[in-house]
Structures are given as C-alpha cells and as structure tokens.
Image (tube, one colour):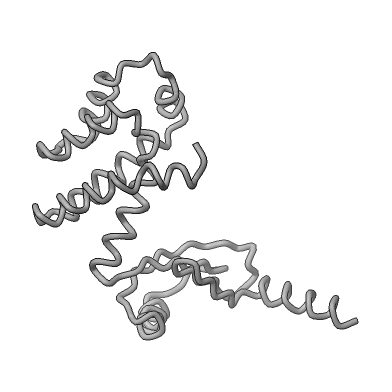
Length: 181
C-alpha cells in the first residue's frame, strides 16, 4: 500500500479513536495503544503475517490484544474492527496521525533536534523557549546525535527544517560558489 493510501485508510479510524479518547478522557491511553501497536506492526515478521490473506483475522486480533494489554472494551473492539477489515497494516500511520491530532488539540508540537554532540539541559531549555516563541506552541524536544554534522544543529518542526549545521552551511556555500563561478 502506498503512503497516501495508508493515510486515507488510517484517517477515519483515527477520527473514531480520537473521538472516543476525548469522550472517555483518555487521550494518553489511546496514544499509548496506537504507538505500541505501531511498534508491533513494524516488525518484519508481523508485517509478513499481515500480508497473508489466509491468516484468520480473529487470530490476528487476539494476537494484538494479548500483546497490548491492558485494553478497555472500546480499545479491544477497535483492534477487532481493524483486524476484521484487514487494516492492522495501517497502524503505524494511525499512530502518526493520532499523535498529530493530540498535539494540535493540546497545542503542542514535537520538534526533532539533531546535533553533532550531546547538548546540555541549559541549552535545550533555552532552545525550547525560543522555539515556543517562534512556533507559538508548547514544544517537546526529541534530541538525537549525528556526528556527521561536524557541528551545529538541525531543527525539524513539522515540515519546517532549520539547518544550522556546519555540514548544511558548507553545502549551501558550495551551491552558491557553483552558481556564482
């Protein structure tokens, strides 16, 4: 299934799960369920199993429900509906869309910071405050280290990328020199 098709398939299920999560006041439990289910689905052997039409959907549902315990009645039914409709393969996309809905609802945004070296808490706190002002939202930083950057950081917030890395600056300088000379 293409990425666009997965998103189209996932969207109505996410809308139903999000609606239930709001009514039941358990966004966190639903987010945990979908993220854990996405991790299960990401396993290569599980993906192979999900692509086999001969596999009984009841067994698939029971497999997920057993692994993901504890689930409430709504979540258990949700997993059974996904299995019956052969939509378990879309769980990673459902988790992504659900996370995005939660962030919009909570007025937060997950921001990825990639750095050449480990960053200290004082710097990360200052960066978070700066990004909150710039994005006008609460931010949650996810920090990774990539020594290939040489120095500096790359900040990714949704579809915005702010490249302050040495590698990025060198790349921009080379492109400028190529077009100028």
